Length: 274
Image 1: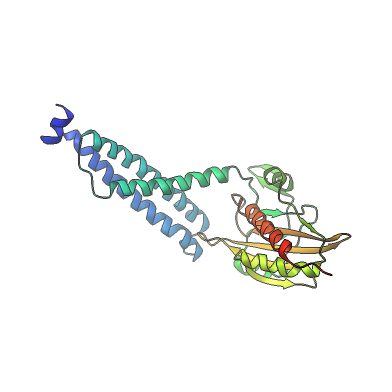
Image 2: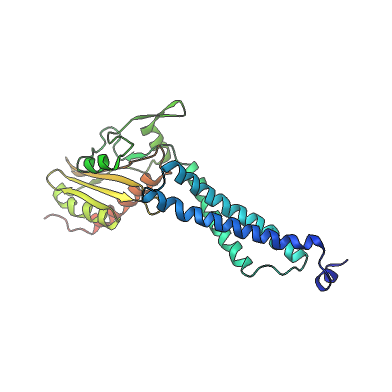
């Protein structure tokens, strides 16, 4: 029987498989969507513990990947047998592909990040947290507020500072010719522009402390900006630490880099002292 004959006459039993595969793909996509809707927000409102929430997220992306693969096979088979498929099959496959691709990109991105959660522009004398300590304690922060120079990872000792320098060599302080008094306002404004919640802005101490909340899981990461006078002006150091988790998939480093770029731009626009 030719393809044209199968399209006009009775379908062979094997021609039923494309529709079945597409329906299975639709179920897998629905399961994946439910998992992704529940996982992050569920942890954010404390209905799910961290590990189950992470597992649900991973399973959600895997479900979308399976939906794309199974649905793609069904779509190709349907074209082979000239079999009409459920309405919206092409749209579903496109959506499955986008979500699965996002998960793959995240995994690749995270796999390249070192298993550290504390990033600073000054590993020798990192800025210390003060104002956020009470909030960290109330939130049950798992990671200590003190900078740890080593971490135990899979039975081995990891040099945190060395791992940071290797992965993020451009996380460096800002040296400015302006005095600290002129840098507090742009330092605080840059923090607000980043969408952080300002906890304290102490001009006398040259310190800005803030908390950033991630969108999906609602993870809280604390940031401290320290401004110190130098012989040629000022030095600005930044530190960002996650309250939970051993690794951060590069979130803190990218946050610090984004803040430093924004702050440099604001300093360049600010008027200088006479």
